[in-house]
Each structure stands twice: as C-alpha cells, then as structure tokens.
Image (cartoon, rainbow, N blue to C red; front, side, top):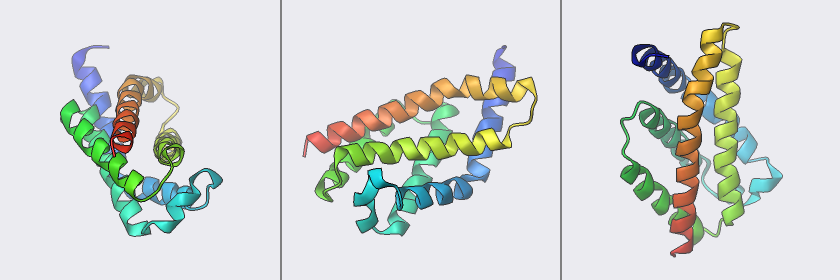
Length: 148
C-alpha cells in the first residue's frame, strides 16, 4: 500500500475514533464499573474515569496520526500509574482497564466496518499502531506504579 493510501486509511480510522469516542467510552464505562476484574474502579469518580478514557482515545488518535511523541505517552502514563497506586488500585486492575478500553474501541470500529476489503486493510494497517500505543501506555503505567 502506498503512503497516500495509507494516510487516507489512517485518517479514516482517526476520524472514526474521534467522532465516536463518546459511544466507545460509554460502553467502556458500563464494563469497567461492572466487571469483576476491575472492582477497585467502583470507588473512583465515574466522571474522572470518563475523562481519562476520553483522553486515552484522543491520544491514541494522535499517536496513530503520528502527532504524539513517545515521550508524552511515557510522561502521562507513568503519572497515571503513580496516581492509581496512590488510589490503591491493584496493577492487575488498571492493566485490565486498558485492555477493556482497547477491546471496546476495536468492537466499535469492527461494528462500523463495511464489508469492503479496504476497511479490513484499514483495521490491519492501524492495528500495529494501536497495539504499540496500548503496550507502551501499560508499560509506563506499571513503571509509574512501581516507582511510587
């Protein structure tokens, strides 16, 4: 796939996430506040969780568009890991929260795909960037958590 086509596909994915982040976050919120693997999150302010989830999706969009430096990802998620430690959220639960957000993002994207090959290529092309973003976010959250 050439660079122009790749850019169009990336822009389509970014637009889909940005324009529909509220729907994704609502599904995520319903899950995180009911999921047995994230019970510690029930004691946190739901509005704060919503805002953090929205920020993660905005940053993901920037990351995919290559508008977010790795250093900014590192700084924010280390800080978030430290905060979760101070709040008493077990590391396994904040890791699961990231997993749930990623899952709900992909479920939404998949529900919006047409049955065209281009859309499947879109998902595959962007998948690497998404995985890398969430992996880095998880790593830096854990290092922030451990350094507290």
